[in-house]
Amino acid sequence: MPNIVTQIADKVRPVGVATNYGDPVEVGDQTLIPVSVGWFGFGGGGDDQNGGGGGGGATLPVGAYVRRPGRDLEFEPNLISLLVVSIPLVWVTGTVLRKLIRVLKK
Image (cartoon, rainbow, N blue to C red; front, side, top):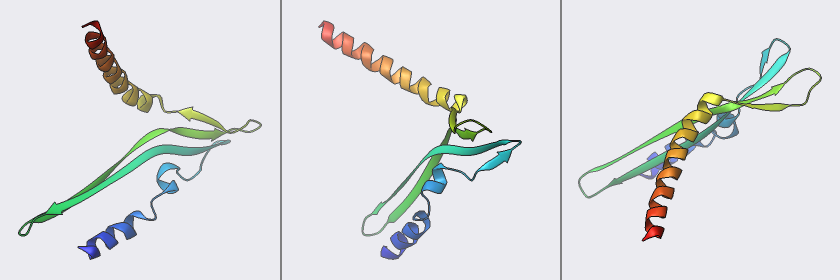
């Protein structure tokens, strides 16, 4: 088992800033640096006879830093990702507030 943990750690260790910030891309006279949010999870378990494990990860593109000639570096969000994240957040917030109001009315 320690060998597997070492192998996973060696593969995940180089993943860091490069996961969240892409290589600069030249588009015309602009320079774009893509930005994302990423996370990973690993787990394992077992008993005397059986064992197993697994892992996974996800990234969400949140936008890009854009440098235009004669202007400062600006962040431009990815509106589709913003909607994908905000819709469930608004739903959960509304559900919690609705239940909280019901409890406070009693």
